[in-house]
Amino acid sequence: MNDLDKKQDAAWVRRLLEWYDTNKRILPWRSSPTPYFVWISEIMLQQTQVDTVIPYFERFVQRFPTVSELSGTDIEDVLKVWQGLGYYARARNLHKAAGVISDNHNGIFPESAVELQKLPGIGEYTAGAVASIAFGEAVPAVDGNCLRVFARFWGISDVIDEPKTKECIRSRLAGYVSEGNPSGFNQGIMELGALVCRPTNPDCGQCPIKSGCMAYEKSLTAVLPVRKPKSSVPHRTLFAAVVWRDDKVFVMRREYDEMLGGLWRFPNVTVKPGDETSESLGKIVEEQISFRARITGKYGQINHAYTHFKVSITVFRCEFNEGTAISSELRETLVNVAWISLEDVEEYPFDKASLKIIDLIRSVDFS
Image (cartoon, rainbow, N blue to C red; front, side, top):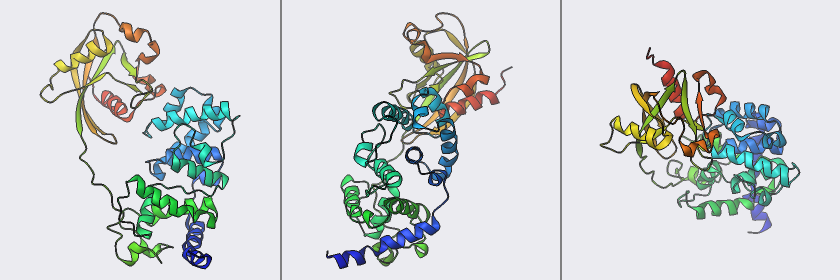
């Protein structure tokens, strides 16, 4: 492509930038696009809607306004502030990366996408977003919105979930990101995908780059992008034990390297089909907490959906009876178990399913 053809072909970049400048939403991280704020927002926005993120972002940066204050706090405090936002590995990686920035970079953010990718929890997209928005580096930031926009714009019929398709789009965009302001370019694409080129019912009439869009011209917006068929979501049945000793309940903290690591939970066990009896609950006491307890009632059931599976949890009320209060294995790491009152639960970070259990406990009167 000669220079004249490229200039004409890149006219959509100018239209995109003009549209973004006029239509961009007012967001807290945009009003102060420091590297730290951009980084926090981009991590939070992974697989999470903007409206959900805003209050979490505001609370987070109020509690941890700088990378040094984030690195200097305890991970449990970070998880507590993050509580409810989900995908908790993001919070743990934020804390780890803050430590690396403080210890290895004197508290100063790396400015290139290549260096940013060396930090925990930062992949190619996040590195591109932070580098372009905070530092003006001419590098694409290819997220789900971007993939959808350009699968339609360029009429790409390959499966969008495939790495080779993503790399194709990223490579093509690399030739255009330097045509204008890299920050406005990448944020303009994100905003276009969020507000106009939506997954369903795109508002093509308001699209600044509809001229030249293959999907628009050929009425393929309902067909593109092409995705892999969704597999069925597995369902699991669990029993949970709420064990009381006087006015306190027993809780356990998950190991940091497991799902929902660092968050507190009630003892629970996955129940196999055909074994859905209260006898299965005894296994919780024997295998997980190693003290005697007796079932005194049933609170009820809660349902919860994770990213890749759903659970139904039957919650039993139990009373501490006698025996070793904490198993020998748990005694070696007492920090991972606790007896707490319901009034104290606000001091501990719990996952959403456990919070539902707490709400259920509070709603049932066994007196």
